[in-house]
Structures are given as C-alpha cells and as structure tokens.
Length: 154
Image 1 (cartoon, rainbow, N blue to C red):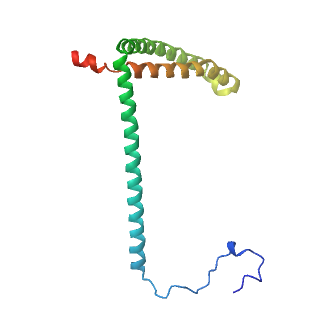
Image 2: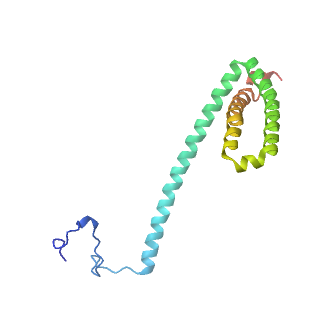
C-alpha cells in the first residue's frame, strides 16, 4: 500500500490491514495479565504521587500552624483581643444574617422575578457579607487557643 497516491498526509492515516508485525500470537489470558500488570504499576505510581502530595500539604500546614503559634506567643495580649473581637463580630454577623434573611423573606418574589432586584440585593449585601466573613476568619484564626506560655502557667 503506497501513501504516494493519496494526498492525505501519512500522519493522519491509520493502517487497519490484517497484517501484523507480531510474530507470536498472544492469548487472551496473557493479554489480560499484561494489561493488569500495567494497571497495577500505574496505580502504584499514582499512590506514590498522592503520598508525596499529602506529605507536602501536611508539611505546609504544620509550618503555617507553627508560625501562627509563634505569632500568638509573641503577641499574647493581641491574640486575646482578636478572640474577643471575633466573638463580638460574630454577634454582628448574626444580626446581619438576620437582616439579610428578613429581606429575602420580604422581597423573595421580586428577587426571583426581576434581575434588577436580584442585582440590587447582591450589591447591597454581597460585599459586606464577603468582607465581614473575611475579617471574622482572620480574627478567629489569630485569636484561637492560648499562647503556649499561657498554657504552661495554668
């Protein structure tokens, strides 16, 4: 079979003729065993890569937790102040959520029917909700737990 009489590039041709270069026929069982071995090797490689990924994530988390604890140990008063601020801000968030849900109850039909009303609602509550959540997360993280020096005194 010649590729010269067809203008299609040989890169895009697949020869599906019955001819085979393999001189020794392979039984179905041998083929299955070979494929299963390849599958096992692939799974072992995936397991190894996932194990390395978990170890890296754990190391990063441990380092971050250590740095956060060092900051808390160096700033115990500020850490306690962050905890108190987070508790107060949590109350503010609860009130904000109450207002938000009341607004949804009052104008739920308008929000569903009109895109303008939905956009107004999102513009009114969305940025405040996002910023409030972000600030609350930072304060809660910085104010969690007692510094190690404080724990050892108790």
